[in-house]
Image (cartoon, rainbow, N blue to C red; front, side, top):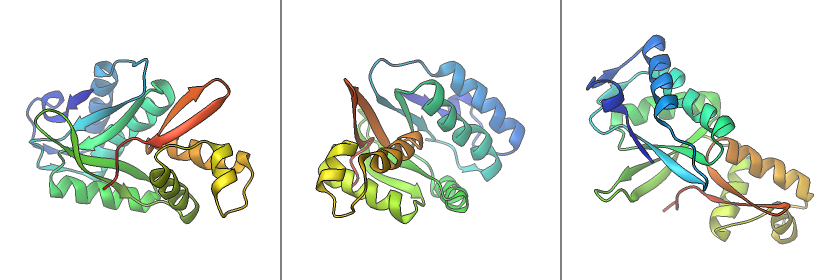
Length: 186
């Protein structure tokens, strides 16, 4: 799924303010469609020159949080953001000790140059890196393979936290949940 921010904002290239961010949230909620299978929802910033932290907080971050609780198969990803938008979002996320995927989209829609904007604490960062290295993992498999001696419940809490931020994609198979990075990090 790809949602064009500039189209939703009627061609506005400079996006600012709490109220405008809240209006974008409403438009994103209306445009997002539930998915049966987990998939990225690319918030395409192509053509947007600047977006303020207040706009991003009330629109983009609020949509990410909404999607992760209400549309659990959607994983919002920032796409095609200008350096100014990326810088503002990176600063905001680091201040909150939060993180979000960002990438460029190729013409055919494939993600390119994926990276995580923001900051993860040491425990979440090491968990994310381990899952990224393995490709896919479950809490019991991490408990069995990791040098950290944590119970599966502790691993599940870390994995669930990363999924709630939209960094790991969660799939359920019977009673077991498996997790994989939403995008392949380079």
